[in-house]
Length: 231
Image (cartoon, rainbow, N blue to C red; front, side):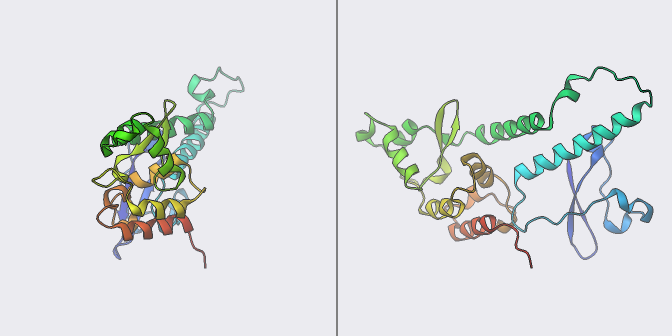
């Protein structure tokens, strides 16, 4: 699904999720709030999101929900005949199936960026000759101590190279960030957060600022961990 950012005179920006885009029809033009006709106002929904970055999982969920509702409405208006036709494979596909496919695509995108190391590769990066007999030992100790995390792919643990310093050691800031997330995020959700543009960092990705602006990344992680604040 495509997103568009609109602006009004006071420079507030809004992202437009278009049903037309989801249904693969002619894309709708981006519009400013004052351009929306009064008799079409009910076709728009303005949602206030948390001040921190919009999680990829949230975008996937919105896309899936819009596609599902739009599809139901489209099928209901195709014909008024009572006869029930055989549903296509896509129609049979459940919301959970579509959501799973999209999450898998997001995992592929993050993983294929090529910045992940096996425990053996991590040990080689450090030049740790003593780890040859058990290359996973040091990486697993770091993971258990909360100094680094790993995602599981094809039955193996993969560690982020961007979380390491030039000597192959975990950056100290990683322990603080992982402690903030605690058990609230899965390893893949943590990876998504590090790879996604973050509004608290001026649109930069947390992974790109770990070494240069660790304090700012910790603040962004704090905002993410606290979630939206009401009142």
